[in-house]
Picture (tube, rainbow, N blue to C red):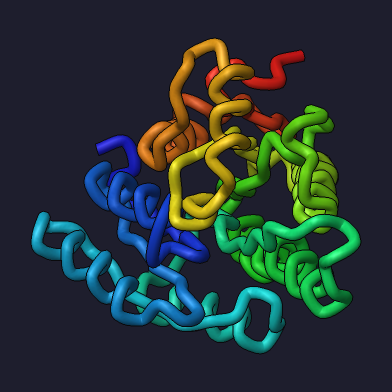
Length: 249
């Protein structure tokens, strides 16, 4: 029960890494807010599983790239639970196209959700956390944003995650001493988002990974649990790479 009675918002929590974080946080005692945009059925299923295991969860639909919807997400959380201890900026999109094939709209969508969304959500919860004199923000970045050559295949995604890494450090500086801000940079994690990546690319990734396996959503969730716990209270502004050694530097 490392997060007993903590209130946590996890964006994009209806599937993949976000779902694993929400379920693990709930098992560790947190009351979780499951944010989603399209996958209502999946989000409700996550909340139902949490409640059946004795946890507490609510679902809130909100597009994190729109400030009015982010405000509603935070207001709903405050009306329900009265405080916010943890924000996990996990919502993200990945458009697997070559630089010359990506459209301007796809570029905008990627930056808006991956980077602007983290900015808007952090800006909305930070005053609440500062008033509480305690809070944790965790940004879900990527190994792609750390300039590892073979991970930098998709330009708009790389740009959004490199921006998120910069945002993490800037917010850690601005929001201390009461709020910690860190990022997790997963490598190749087996999720729905990457399910259709070419098998030859998957082989290349395994060849470059010392641990010789793909990461799981649970691998990432365990790191998100640590960063949200009291054990990590002296860690801020850091980028935690969870990639099985791929791209180590």
